[in-house]
Length: 90
Image 1 (spheres, rainbow, N blue to C red):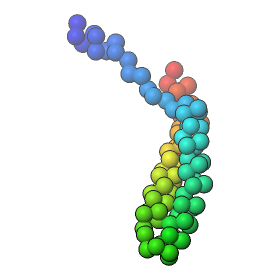
Image 2 (cartoon, helix red, strand yellow):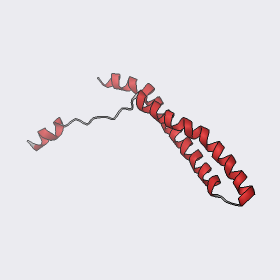
Image 3 (tube, one colour):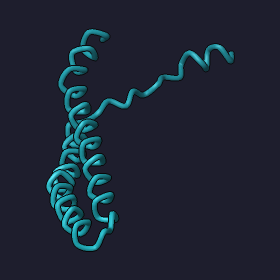
Image 4 (cartoon, rainbow, N blue to C red):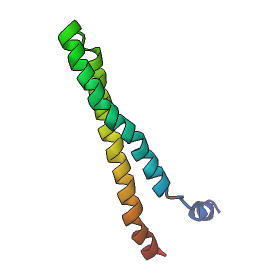
């Protein structure tokens, strides 16, 4: 009886949706615009006051923007190309 219950449990595959991918890219867009501005301000603050805070913050924002963009593009590609695999299994 336990074996029968275990075989009837179906796993839900979390297939990425197109809207979810667009959300990642929408989050990445302001970060991609903000990072170079903060880095430029950071270099100017470094020259004027010898403070590294804004430069480090700009670099961190830039790395986060690159990662979020990459995750968004991966989700878009999974949405486009995993659709065919689902039809082959059925």
